[in-house]
Length: 138
Image (cartoon, rainbow, N blue to C red; front, side, top):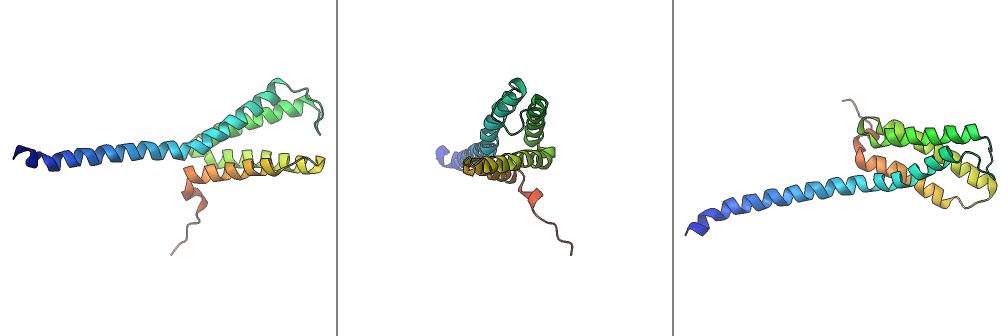
């Protein structure tokens, strides 16, 4: 008899736990693409920043390479911060657009670079989709 009275209370606790687990899982899945892209951009930026005398590049100036590395680091920092996600996304997409053009100019495969560019926009959209919708006034 006592077990029947506690049943609604137990169901409520289980529902709250399930909701908490879904919320945590949802946040992990929302941030996963951004973290994967971060694992691409950060080594790329540090490579340009710490090894500026790379050969075989279109622009072989070490100052340009260091500036590109700093640009990527600033872009990824703005990309990861929710209030500046749009600015960071724009910076990273601008950088990757130039990389796509360079790959096309040199005749290198550019499909993977294009996918990274699209993934950057997609990750931004997943995290803050309301930034991409136009507000209509009535």
